[in-house]
Image 1 (tube, rainbow, N blue to C red):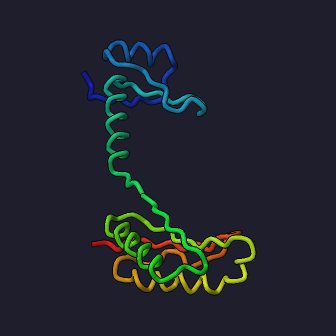
Image 2 (cartoon, helix red, strand yellow):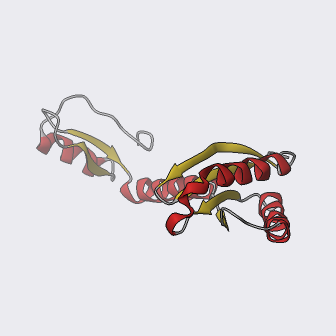
Image 3 (tube, rainbow, N blue to C red):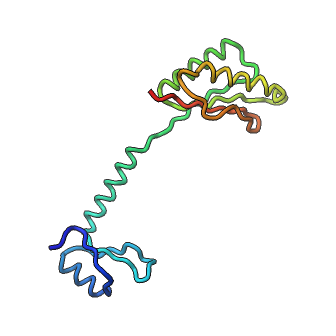
Length: 152
C-alpha cells in the first residue's frame, strides 16, 4: 500500500476510481473548477479529522480583544474623573482595551477643547499602564480615544 495521501498524474475518472478502490482509500475532488478537475486519493475520514484539529488549534490561538468603555461629560468634576480613572486603571491592568469618550449633549458641543483636554489628561495619567492607540477624534457628538494596555 502506498502512503496516506497518494497524488496521481492526469488520469481519467474511471481509472482514478479504480486505483482508489484498489488502495482502499477515497477519491476527493480538490479543485473542481480547474480543467481537468484536480482529485486526490486519500483517507477522507482522516482528512476531516485533521482539518477539524487544525481549525480547533487556530481557534484556541486566536486572542479575544475586550473593549471597556468609559464615558465622560465635557465638564466632568475632579471626583468623577478620579473615580472613572480608577476604573480605567483596573481595566488596563486586566488586559482590556479602553475606549474613553466625551459625550456632548445639545449645545455643549461648543466645549470641544475641554473634552479634548480631559481625554489627553486621562492618557497622560494612564501612561504607565497603557499607550494611546488613537488620539482624541470627534465623531458626531462624541470625542473618542482608544488606549491599549502595555505588554508585561
